[in-house]
Image (cartoon, rainbow, N blue to C red; front, side, top):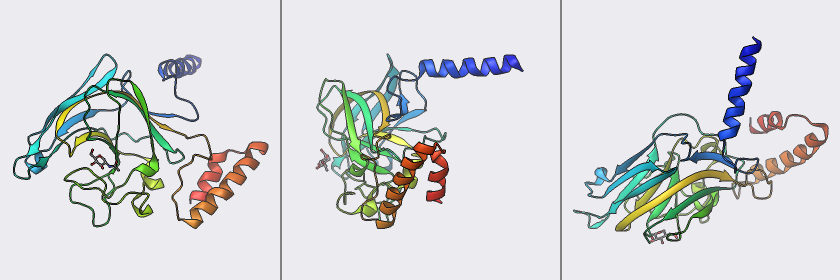
Length: 255
Ligand SMILES: *[C@@H]1O[C@H](CO)[C@@H](O)[C@H](O)[C@H]1NC(C)=O
């Protein structure tokens, strides 16, 4: 029995030792290619009869996504390549976070990079448009941490180009929901809607701004949820003083 406890402790310590330095209250690790958590697979534009080609490999602790986006022959517009997670293990709950933080570099000046998560489908959305999507603008030849606010994503986007049709800022019904952030289900990086050579190297993906109440992503225009957040933050302050477990209150207010 004692040995089991010891082993358990040792394995927990080992996990701590390999966990990334950024991981703390404000940042929640979603993927790190130094120690990959998920299974990623590259896929091109076969659904549209496209001819784009891409690959994804993990080399020297980074995920390397490269390929060529070309016009779909009969549509005469550029198709897509993308790499996405295909495993079904649940993601950590990031519904209390304000943004994503992706560390990557692009070795080409390709303009059609996108990032998406989930499998949401907007009411009357385009046939092949699933998930919340946003443009990913990355400077060339320079390791960068791109911070993307949750409100930059929309599930109402054009499956022919990858561009937003109506953004979350324009209409909050296309913003990521709390439910969608509790388990992302999928993440994907795309080269889409712009012809050209893609070469992106990804080091890590985090949810960020998870600790601060101020940065918290709250659906706009929803009076009841804003009121709930306010009550919750008042109670949080109170529980900090009497040290009650805050997740019980979370549970209470969410149900
Ligand atoms: C996203 O990128 C595409 C392709 O470069 C561009 O046409 C579109 O205007 C961009 N959208 C936003 C909101 O920046």
